[in-house]
Length: 210
Image 1 (tube, rainbow, N blue to C red):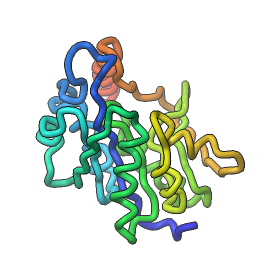
Image 2 (image 1 turned 45 degrees about the horizontal axis):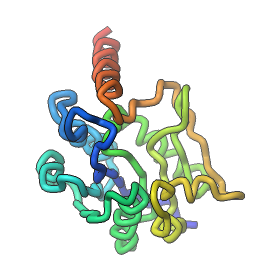
Image 3 (image 1 turned 90 degrees about the horizontal axis):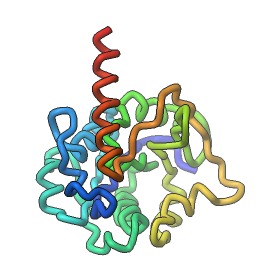
Image 4 (image 1 turned 60 degrees about the vertical axis):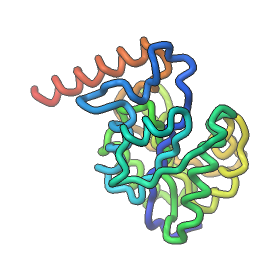
């Protein structure tokens, strides 16, 4: 087990938006920027370092939307084979940096994850002693999922869409549930999901002004 030190942010942003027929969802506007930029800004603001973003489909456009001044970009040319390949590419990049003790895994199409939640789960991981800490919202488990460096080899061996699940489903593995008293952020897969994410963001802003 690690000494609970530096946590990197790993944002998976390589997918082809197959179910979103309104164009590449990562490039859609969200809160004055783009979906993917909002998803990356959250771990930056939360203080995670480094931030690694895995790109694939329309990589140059996603790179431009993310910006390169605050992140390390990794390209996954085999992104069509499933999310496990992107996770493996990102983890391989992080594993080469010996000072990183864990990775906080996030999705490029989930811009509603807040910096406060990321910090809360990171603090729980540091203090909890379990190899994995996972945000559990009112309605379902979600992100971030923070995974100890000792499990990086397992994450590099996943296939298809079984990358992170290959860790979370392991028998006997201690997964610390970190309860978040909020509705889970929207994972934008369809145009309806995008509309709901925009609506939820507007509701958050209204509550903040009250």
